[in-house]
Picture 1 (tube, rainbow over the protein chains, first blue to last red):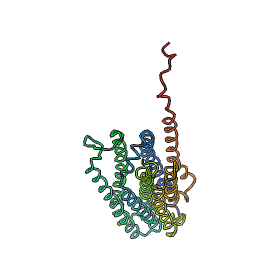
Picture 2 (picture 1 turned 60 degrees about the vertical axis):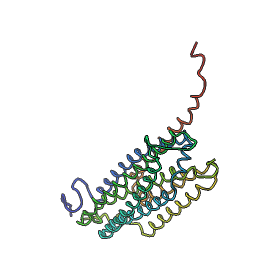
Picture 3 (picture 1 turned 90 degrees about the vertical axis):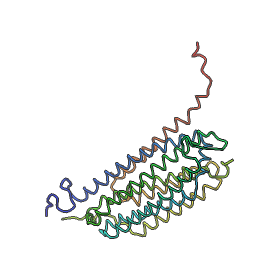
Picture 4 (picture 1 turned 120 degrees about the horizontal axis):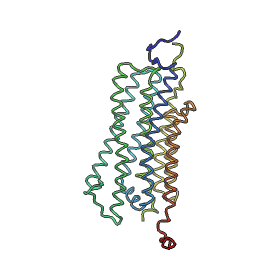
Length: 222
Length: 110
């Protein structure tokens, strides 16, 4: 039987469901490549400044609360699992299960942002926001410390904005899932949302050691 | 409909997802513990190696790249490869700038 235009989930400009799926997948990966370039600029600049102002960056890393960073890493990894399960449920066509896994992801995403609020407010109270109010009483150049915290806020802040957008995307997806828009034949928006969320997880997988972990070893802290 | 997408897809077993997520948790613990162990100059490379391994697990299994077509492999790899070029050229520039501290060359005044 030949398929007619707009019959079922297949859009008329695609030959078949597979081609439609691959086109959506490829578009999403092109977007992710662009996101790598976007975050890559910041990671590159961070590398250069860390190399130039090693002592200040080591002291900065040692000042960050490792327990909160570790907790957030665990939360994000758990949320990547719930998203992977949501996509799997979509592949099987279980709408109820997609909803539940996405709700779990939302809870974890909000928990991540909650931890970030705790960390940011702690920095606010200790005058560590790079501004005129910035205060640093150590032995190193306060200007270099400011640069470290500028990177900290720019990178974690941009990451947090991505998390907020991700949570927003789930609010957009959930009513559509309820309406039964997605099936085992068409679930690209859920799959692509999953790719986005996993990418944001990967960014944090690199941010956590770069900001919180390296420079902790005993030999480097004089 | 002569074909269904669901029949063509690799639907991965829950067990695989569980083992990947356990791996990620364990590696997070390892990288935190390793940060406090004195490994000389190797601390930072080790932290980055673990992060790259964790990221690769996410890309291959959670993002399904392992089961995708070669074209998708290229698309997925392009962004990361571009980032390596950025980092390599950036650092070879900054790390070879020792010239700046050399006193001015005198023959320029001739």
